[in-house]
Image (tube, rainbow, N blue to C red):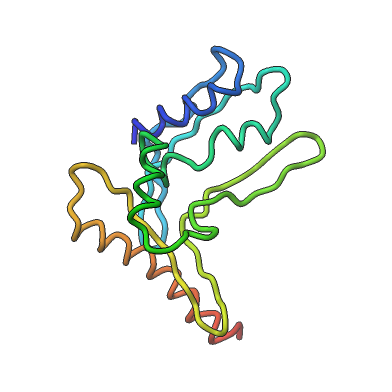
Length: 157
C-alpha cells in the first residue's frame, strides 16, 4: 500500500507545485458489505499553467489498478489479460466550469448487454500473494455486485 501511495505522490508531483504534495490520510480502513479497503489520501496544489485535465492525465491509470512500475505493469496486463477492461479500473467523475474535478476509480463493474450481466472485480496482486486467497477476495467483491443484480431483478416493492 505504501508503494502505491508513493506512486500517487510521484504522479501528482509531475503537475503540482513543489512541496505541496502531502499525504493527508494513511492506512484508514473502510468497511463495506463484503470487503474492507485500506484508504489513503494524497493532495497537492496545481502548478501555474496546469489544470484538472493535466492532473487526470498524470494520475491515470492509477497505480492501484495497474501496478508498479506503472509502464511495465501495464505492458504485462496487456500481455496476460484475455480481454480489454472496458470501464473497469478507469475513472468516473466530473469536471466543473470553475476548474474543479472529482473522480473515482471504477473498481467493480456490472455491464449489462442483451440481458446478460458481466461482472468485473479484482484483487491487488503482489510478490507474496497467495493465488487461492486472492481468488477468494475477488469472489467476495463480486458477491456484492451479484447481490445487487438479484435485488434489481426483484424490483423495488
